[in-house]
Amino acid sequence: MTTIRPLNDDEVFSEMKKMVAFIRQEALEKAREIKVKADEEFNIEKAKIVRQESLNIEAIFERKIKQAEVQKRISQSNYINKARLRTLQERQSVLDNLFDEARSQVNEVQKDEEQYAVLLEKLMLQGVFTLMETEVVVRCREADADNVQLAIENVTKEFEEGVKQSISISVSEDYLPESSAGGIILYGLDNKITVDNTLEARLEIVSEEMLPQIRATLFGHSPNRRFFN
Image 1 (tube, rainbow, N blue to C red):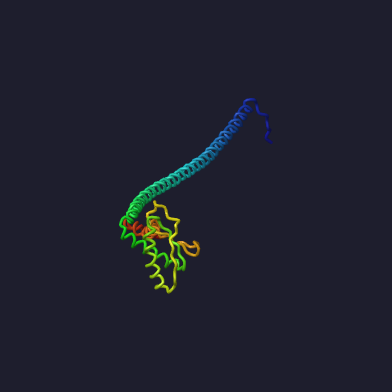
Image 2: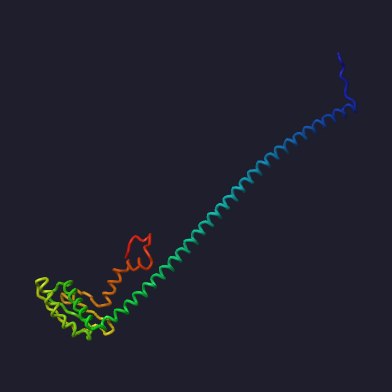
């Protein structure tokens, strides 16, 4: 039987050193494991942060690009609209000048007395055929009253022959202003219906009817125009 003897001090110290060394080694290995794991987690988290920040930067960049594109389109649209508006204004100015010139020419019509008298008769005839009334009142400038009175006989005859209906035409003493370019206004059915055959009114009608043709002649046909009035 082997006798177990107690350890002496040197042996105890030696065993304690071994235990301390073992514990220290385990602690170092554990610390290394913790550091490695911490480094891995740090790198993973850092990669996540970098990726997220990259995505944020890309999103901001894309948003800035879209904003710039929208602003560019708005600027282009504003420029085009302003240019179109300037063009329309310039074209309207040309048309206004043209019609102003036409109005000034209308004022010259009355200077040829013979032709103007014929014109008054034609305007009266067109008016009575439009009204188709048995009693018609004609309003004119006082300076034209004699010519209008002279035209009544021929107009009455032609109307009655044309529609087989009698008509009474009288001249109103409520004259048109002398500033008027001329022409007449006809009233029927106790002044309830009117035909404005003044030269100004006829010019407006002709201007509206010819406006599409005038536009096309001056500026050409617009490919975007769907209506031509």
